[in-house]
Length: 295
Image (tube, rainbow, N blue to C red):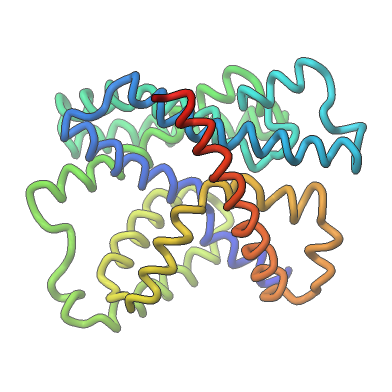
C-alpha cells in the first residue's frame, strides 16, 4: 500500500472544518451575532464559490467527458443545490454542512440548557448511532443521495460540531492551554507526531472527532515562527476554493497531468500550487458577485 494512502488516514479535512466551524459560530452566538439571516449570507458566499467552480470545471468537463458533464436536468439541479455530488464526490460535505450551519443557533441554545458535558454525551450517542446505520445500510448500498443518508450524515456531524462549540465556551472562562506543555514546546510536537502515527494505523473514522480535537489542542501549544504563521494564514484564506477545486485536477479532469509528475511530494506541491493559483480569480470574481448581491 502506498504510504500516502496510510498518511491520508490522519488528514481527513471534514472533521477539522466542522470543529473549527463549531468554534467560530459559537463565538458569534456568544456575541449575539448569529442568526438565520447572517447564516444565509455566509452560506451564500460559500455557494457562490461553489457555483462559479462548477461553471468553470463542468464547462471544461463537457469537452473532456461529455457523457458525465453536465448530464440530465435533474443532475444539473441536484449538483447546483449540492444535494447531488456526481460532478465531484469530494463536495459531499456541502449539503449537510449547510443544514448544520442553518440550525447552529438552536443547537447552541440546546447546549445552553443541557450543559457542556451532557450535551457532548448525548451528541456522541446520536453520532455513534448515525455512523452505525450509515456503515450498515447506506454505505453497503451506496445510497448516499437519499434523504435518510443526509439525515444520518447531519446527525453524525453533531458531536464533532458540538466539540468545537464547547471548546469555545470553555475558552470564554479559562484558558484551554496547558502551562506544562507551553513551557516545553518540544513536547506537544512529539505528542502530535506520535498521535498522527497512531491515527495512521486505524482504518475507521470513528475516532476522528477525538483525534481532531487533540490535534488542534496540541497544535495550539506549538510556537510558530512568524513566517509559518503568515503562510498558514494565507493558505487559510484560500483554503475553501482550493478544497473545492483540487479534486477536479487530481481525480476527474487532469488526473494524468497531475500524476505524471510521478513522485508524491512533487505531485502534492504541484497540486497545491495549481489549486492556490486558481483560487485567486475564483475569489476575486466571487467576492465581486457577493458584494453586488449583498449591499
